[in-house]
Length: 143
Image 1 (cartoon, rainbow, N blue to C red):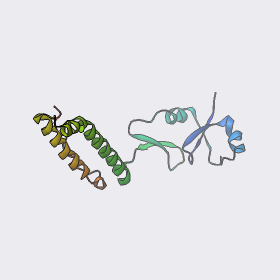
Image 2 (cartoon, one colour; image 1 turned 90 degrees about the horizontal axis):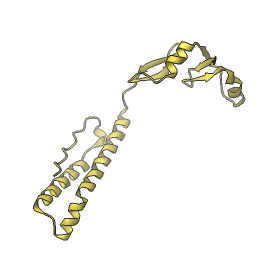
Image 3 (spheres, helix red, strand yellow; image 1 turned 30 degrees about the vertical axis):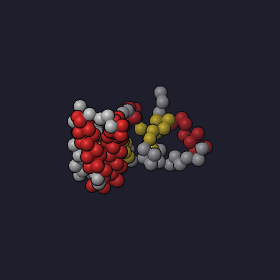
Image 4 (tube, one colour; image 1 turned 135 degrees about the horizontal axis):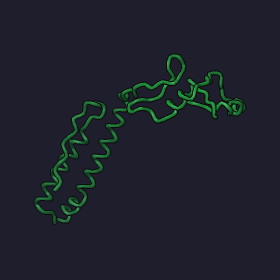
């Protein structure tokens, strides 16, 4: 039977029979705490939905709510969404732009191209620093 140790500073479990290997490698093992099989089984498994494992105030593992994303993380998510939507607009409009340049675009496709180009302009104007309070422009209907 394997015995495990918990390290609050590493937020991780380690096999007790490998402590000397960790020490030889220069690890600080001073905070390793022996834990029973129940604690190891509960906290080495996948976390419950919406939770992450942390070291509690007592130094033992505990589940806590995943913290909400920071403003910088929300801005990064919004930037990625903006890039993705702009790339989609380029893909959707590429054939119509070629047809327009060749003078062979239909009136319906020209109207669609115009709608998508307006959408593209609106997307470019989205201020991602306002995340999470962003009003994304509505995507035109695809025909």
